[in-house]
Amino acid sequence: MNPQLRYAYIYENLQPLTALSEGTWLCMYPPRNTLYVKKEIPQACVSYYHTLASIHSRNLAPVLFVTEEGNTAFVLSEYVSGQSLAGLLQEGKTFSQEEARDICTQVCFGLWELHRRGLVHRDINPNNIIISSDNVVKIIDFGIVRSFTQDKIRDTVIMGTPGYAAPEQFGFLQSDARTDIYAVGVLLNQLLTGRFPNERLAPGKLGTVVRRCVEIDAQKRFSSIDQLMNQLSGSAVPGLETVLDTLPGFRSRRGGQAFGAVLLYLLAGMAVVQSYMSLKTPPWGYAVHTVSVLFSTVIPFFCFHNFLNVWERFPFTRYASRKSQKILFRGLGIVSLFVGLAIFGSIA
Image (cartoon, rainbow, N blue to C red; front, side, top):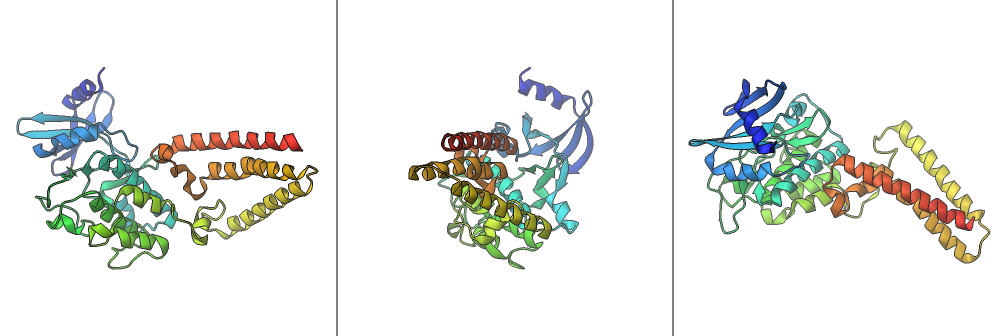
């Protein structure tokens, strides 16, 4: 059956359970006991929601069906089971740098899908972001989404969540991708410190990212969500702290694991040195052996452990699901390992 016909049938047979907020209801489809969210939307937003319905992203709550009934319109969305960031923050949950970076990177993945279609979310905040039961970060509410109009000077309606809304949302300029970037910066700071940037700025490199995101002058912010993701994933030349944050064995910052990792790295280094010392080949053999070490140890290390976020470094994998990234890069790591061993066997 055509998906739109199927969702139209589901929509017609929904059973309302409870009101989640004004104009939004949690509903059940009785034949399968499946939960959905039904939301009333302004007529002016119908075209935006049709665009949202065409997007398939693990970091956006799926919009399944849009319908117009007289002077009103409704949208059917998948119910996402999980806990909102707002709830976690209210419980006093603290996030490590790695956790905060990962959450905001996933938010950026969702925003990238919107921005490349000319849409701006305009209300990124902890209430609108859920960590699902399968540990995926999802943007769940598109209540004030709008399109960017090149020749428009300013927004016609002032909207947004106080503290997360960029200055241009208060009628000074038109919202664009940098409006969402501002909100992501505030969110990142909240995850790291529990405070807004003007109350307490996050320390270190991520604090520098926050500071640029929340510049009053939109021209001084990151110009695109790609730029922000590059900074979050450490695309800039990493310092020692950044390397340690991504090095297997040091990520958890637990002394026992770090000590074990140091021993393991030392043993691996000694094994590589010993392999060079035991070679009895012409001078060119050392160059070939170096290539074999690269393929059998270095490349698999990067691929298996996502060292320095290599899984997000390539355009063709940056927006793939985590599962797809894992399968692809670990497969490449295994292939690289066997290539390296074959090269070593040819000169041993």
